[in-house]
Image 1 (cartoon, rainbow, N blue to C red):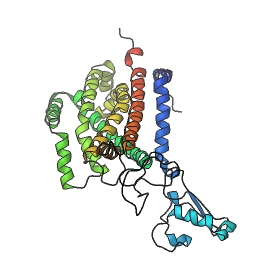
Image 2: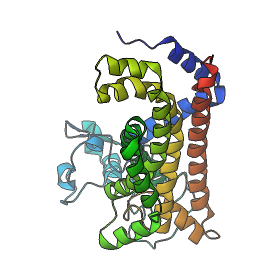
Image 3: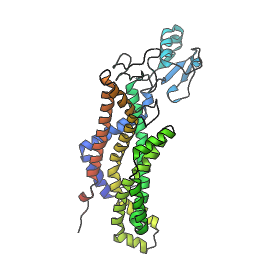
Image 4: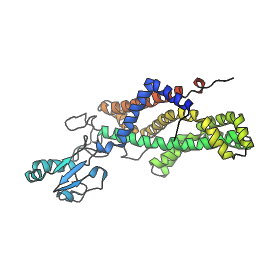
Amino acid sequence: MFRLNPITLKKLRRFRSLRRGWWSFWLLTALVLFTFAAELFINHRALVVRHDGRWFFPAYGDVLPGDTFGLGYQWETDYRQLRERMRGDAVARERGDFTLLAAIPYNATENCYPGEFYRARPPDLEKRHLLGTDTQNRDIFARLVYGFRKALIFSFWVVAGTYALGIVIGCAMGYYRGAVDLVFQRVIEIWSNVPFLYVVIIIASLVRPSLGWLVVINIAFGWMGMTYYMRTGTLKEAARDYVASAQVLGASDARIIFRHILPNTAATLVTFVPFSVAGAIGSLTALDFLGFGLPVPTPSWGELLRQGTQNLTTAPWIVVSAVTAMTLVLTLVTFVGEAIREAFDPRKFTTYQ
């Protein structure tokens, strides 16, 4: 059975005692679960449709053309239209036909006012636009929620990639020292002077930006900071007696690094994760704001910020919504990071003699 050691349990109890970080963690978890289950709450597709004795679940299913429900067209069903038709059809009501829509029956890229002029509209509770629409007639709340999902996916892969590179290279520098340490230090010094934004601009001019490209670019420029932390921690741990004992017993270098040294530097890794996530979200938002991020019409916070600053006087609800969402999420992440850093502080659980 998997068991945590007493020191780790003390750290977790310490984290729970820090109320601001503890409740921020649960609120942030609720937001993450909400955004990854957003199709159940924000979706132009119906959640459930009963038609002529058959049941359909379009939200997570295949695209259903209008002919499936007798609407007379081959493209995807307009479920808002279908609901109104079923409500006005006495025969359909007698059969028990119905359409259950999401609480906000729009998606993040949909023109909510087809056939009308493109303009930002203020919040309208009757039409379920809780935060209004942007300049392209798209629902702002839907774009914020699905944009948050994109930011979380982006930050997960960026943090995973930068930590993987930083851990491997940093541990190699600290453990082997000598030529390995010297070569990688020179590489880092050279690579860290390459301008990140210029590289992004060049790549954006050659290929269409995508989530994958942005992840690769951010990993390529983000691994160096973690490398130095791991180098320092490995240098300190490699000088301890347990490493010498493992070497005498014939343990391989990989086993010593990943089974002995790395677990003893895990506190450093854990405390940096929330701040790395916040940095990745800010990086993607900045790139989207500058126009070098995710391709249009992908929902993103940076694109909403750009719209909001360009229409600050005529549509202030756009920038207010985007700034409020960013402030809330980054504040929660920061509170969680501060609580983890304090809870995992080795000075609280270590006695030096």
